[in-house]
Length: 447
Image 1: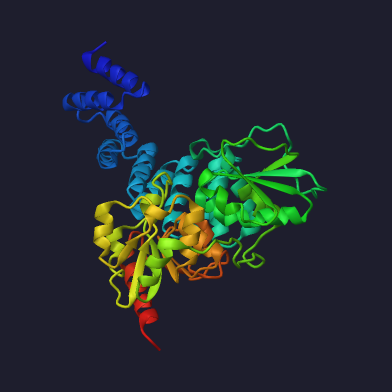
Image 2: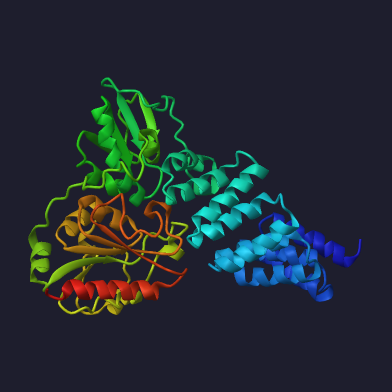
């Protein structure tokens, strides 16, 4: 065996064992001796992509393609790397080339669909997912992604069915509960107990908990299992018993995932009740006094959500962006950002009150929001909370905004008090900030 072949074998073993940087180092050593080895270039690109070094991975794929232009998988993986850094149109171009070279490359259709979805092109994305399912029927990734796009375009009856496939996607960690009790199948309760469990984020739970009392009206004793940060808040729902994750569950007869309820009820944008459904205790004591001393309308702000959300890098903004309108004369701003860093608060200006010391859970946040005149937020749990309370809410959305915000609308069927400000182009927060600044100026100007 030649020395080069031996090193290629060693690099492959390191790669397979997850020792990625060592594999990359060895790939680079091999390429110094054999710079035209397209397969080593391609494998190094894969290792670099797994390391999160997407720019370097792209260069490796490009070199592999230069020496092997008809290698469809390299075009596909180049598209995936481009998508990781938000270059959606470039990603789409690379993925199209992969599909031309290999028309049955299922992963390329899925990735192309995601690239279209993130550009707000949901109808084209659905076509890609349809094609992926033609090539490989039943795959949960394509069903779930298609469901999100169907929901985004307003086809909720089809969308809720495809959305159920989320439980078959490993990387999402949406794991069905292994309870011995049966799943609820739509039957009346007749005094029995139904456990509803929230399997996604805080905002999802706030958005969908509105449906829990409906089951109580159908004869069920409803238990809602939620993160501890939400327990006090959802305990205010009528006829609902709230239990925090980790607490002992009461005996129950059936169970159901919270986010499948609208599909079970046949909910569409036309029959969705959008009025307030959560309540909050008014602020008292020092916080109330501090708010009363602030001049003008009091406006809560949140510029980013949890970094654990896979879309946060696209949907989140920055304190610097929000500083463009927090200086609007005649208004006072309250930061509801619980994890705000000192340098972020300093960028917002002197007329911003940091409320985070008083926000121990969402019950406290609800009390603060209920004492404000307006909330301005990116796509976070706080905007759902403000909408559920019926407080005027402005939401800043990226171009590929989540399905729940539909397309192009400036209002939301989920929350009657909500106004949406959307990016026209991916990554263009500047125009959104200017639109918010203008709207605030108009609101602050006496008629």
